[in-house]
Length: 307
Image 1 (cartoon, one colour):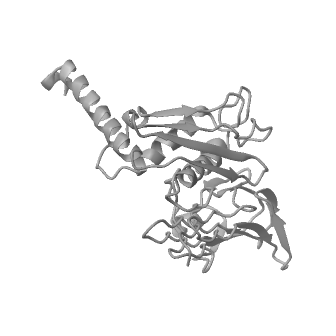
Image 2 (spheres, helix red, strand yellow):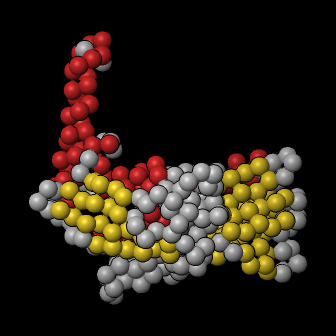
């Protein structure tokens, strides 16, 4: 394009794209109201956000003051992750067919307190920041805007392996309902778009069996519009391995909105070959023997509106 049109023309159209995105977001902001939301995490931390709208300047401030200080665990998130969540949420409010770009952020001032879990100081651990905390930030923003009930606040990160095999997947759950639409059952939400390995490939490449992967009826929150249901995934091991789960939404379910009910919380457990059941927390690890089943119940989405 530079060879055909020249560098200045290409740069000018790149500016046009961002200017158009900025204008689209400014139009949306004029229809928003001030709001605030606090979203608790299973580990005791919280994401707190306030959105203040200036209709005259068609701008908004997103303030994460009140969010928990940086954690000694790995649920801290780099600032870039928090900014990506803000960009995503405000882009999702725009009906226009525009590409996602930095112009969407020009009308928005974002305050992320230094030393908080969303702006941690080195050497803070951040491995769960992109996969878990990002989904919590996104849900908190939608909660403050009042436009969408909570989705599962987790990617349900499941890993297993031994000296010969290693595997990692994220598992879908229920999405939240909104004005005029139900949530979707067993779907990847917001900050993840990864696909599961096909069962045939999964079983061919690893010494495991996928006993079942099914929708969990009734796990979505009730309301005028129903939250999407979570799922239940059962993986049976055929040789000794170590299996781990990194998740959220096992203590606090996806919130309901406008009178809707929250979604059912998730559940992690191991069913041993002899029938014994061992419960795991939102973070857990287990040594799996042949015949043991790792069972993951993903959270349901929140309902919207009084039923």
